[in-house]
Image 1 (tube, helix red, strand yellow):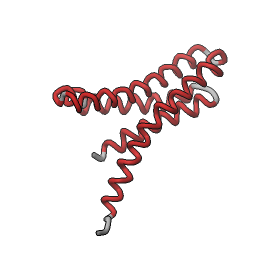
Image 2 (spheres, rainbow, N blue to C red):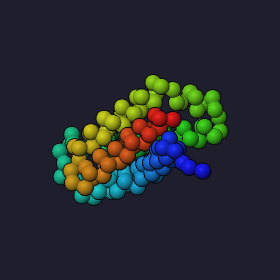
Image 3 (cartoon, rainbow, N blue to C red):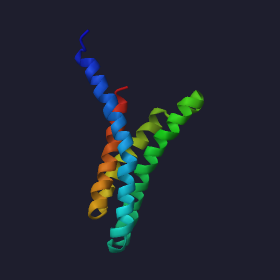
Image 4 (cartoon, helix red, strand yellow):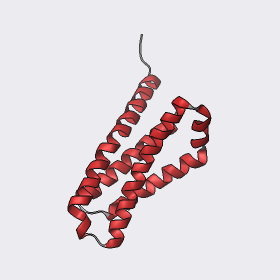
Length: 130
């Protein structure tokens, strides 16, 4: 029994999707902690606000996926209502913009915010193939 390249591609896609999804909360927690401890006082107010909004948007995107998974297990009608094309694309683009806006942070929180955003973008892109 041999494994063809399509099966390998599917396995890699699913594994990367799970890895991206599980890494996001860890990275976002470290970004929030770093932002709160090290950088918050040293940023201009507009950078402080935009950085916090970008981290919150990335966290919200992750929580939306959790909400969808809960609805998919409990009520299919709600799951279909919450995951239509317009909602999905708006969350994807909001997450992409939040990733760019995370560059307003400074130091390690900037790196972690951008990494968390890229992980969520990677998760959404790996989900598109399904």
